[in-house]
Length: 281
Image (tube, rainbow, N blue to C red; front, side):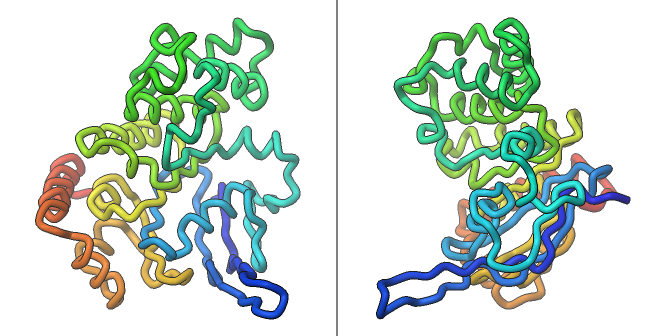
């Protein structure tokens, strides 16, 4: 069984302060996990602000280089990839869709550029075809967004357009950093369900970065929980979140599950159990 992505004792240290007051901050400490090439999954990284989860995502995306350890994509060190070849395999989805697009540029230009640069499209006609196909996979179409600017779409529509832009490249892996935190609560589950369809229908693996335990339980296959840069618990999502063993994991669940979110967690628990009777995550 070959690995799509491997993290081997990956750490990241930042230096903060001036010349005489410099401090070393360990944002991520010796994190290891692997995603298999022949088993698409949604692998979730859970943690509060400052846990290191977004730093971990940026290292997977090649934005930050690890201070130690190694990240391998298809058996090859990420640092050895030419950037364009890497982005054809791995695509990001960021937290705020309104910051992901230049407000002065039409949305379709982003999709055409991605199709030509990373998706292998040769010419405008091919790029339009790939853009329309990707948009339809997220419930939109090129006719709906052609010539439109980001402010002309709702937050939910814009995040779907951002997902479509990632899909245009036909990647093997998507890294989604808090992709529903800026979307209206009523639309969050539709985005999360979309990730499940992309896994099941397109064979995509998704690293889902979140602090939302309800959506993590509902959609994740496996997960890790991070505290101050360290993985404190990992395993199948349902097993870990139903009965966390680490004190921090229990504290996080108890602190996050307010009456409203606890209801959402119960709904997610029931929905997942009904959708996958007898199945393990």
